[in-house]
Image (cartoon, rainbow, N blue to C red; front, side):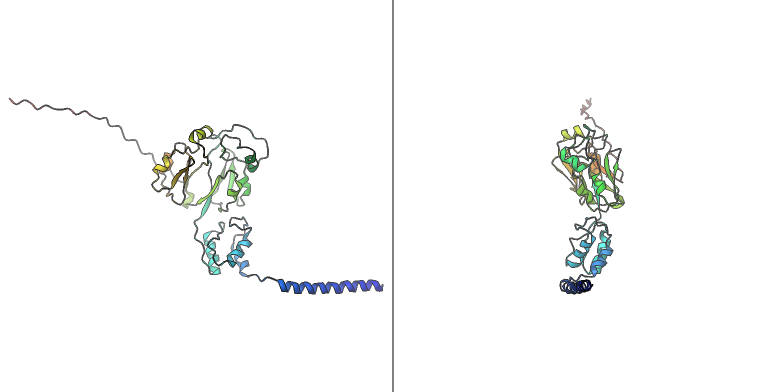
Length: 296
């Protein structure tokens, strides 16, 4: 009995001693955390999507509080107004950035990009892209198994079963960039978000020559350069047989849309410009010399 009591007392004293040691160690090595980090975290949306480049909103909050210059820090989900509020609370200057939206740059729907083979394997875009180009003859088009849809935490993407293409809901999109990282074909791009969700962009990423493109897709860019010639703002460039419209230079004039022979340039929430009527051909008239009348 005495040995049992002695054992209990020994363990009790040892426990108290270890607790005292842990207390002093904790006090010695404790790190004081700025209370503003909690306040900033509450001001952020809490999506933890990684669109800001950090693992989560907590890490973003710590960076906003601890860094003197926050010009490179931006939360696409929160947007410019929230970033201004956070900067005002911290006494810093917020970066000015235009709203962005994800754009899926492939117009090769099922009727325009027919399948040439059948894939019977894991329904995953990354897996398919590892082994071969896909079920169509275009090595640059949408595979259509929805890796991007699963990556989006905001429900902004959906796979259209009729067209076989992924569609973006601009009202739900936060430009977090998850779809950009998820697509193995690199079809998604974060572009400037215009009022009323208007947009003009080249829905093609093929870098093949025009003759090759037309064989596998009726909606692909053939790099003819007609759009580049008609653009008065220098917003369109041709590189590797592919046209690209710079969203920062584009003024939505829509002239390029009518010039594209394959319909690779997509126009959203705007009407096409009416085509100018062709001027009638004027036939050249022969000059008829009139001899002066003889005077009698």
